[in-house]
Image 1 (cartoon, helix red, strand yellow):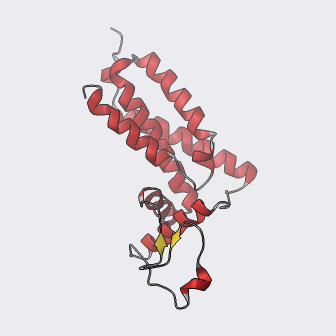
Image 2 (cartoon, rainbow, N blue to C red):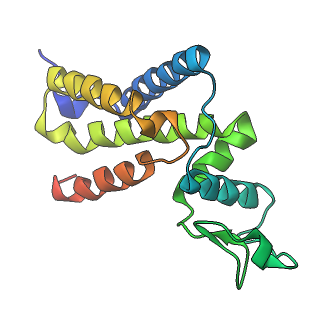
Length: 168
């Protein structure tokens, strides 16, 4: 009897997505090195992660804060990232375990697993395997998995938003 897509366990989807994306990230990092932040957004997300790792949601305003003003960082009433904390939470998780890039890889794995789970009622096992390969390739080799800028956290939210629409 063929296995129906609805019988595929969520744990196997998460294990496959996590293993594939961490492997892609680790191989890419071993070839090109761990990515260094390059854009203002990435520095802002890393500030948010650093703030969370220190057990705070915001930092005190520095003395003479005008000298420290930069893009995408709030200086008043508190010193904090201007972005919502989603990406920073994953960066903080990765930094707490090893390096912030690990948090990027974890968020990418969750995004692939969320895409597979959202499309589970519409595909059989072979179709879900194709979805997993396409999502892993698109996310794994994009800047979403190779920079601190993110995108996977929002993709996870979008996929999970579709789950009630699909009749789960």
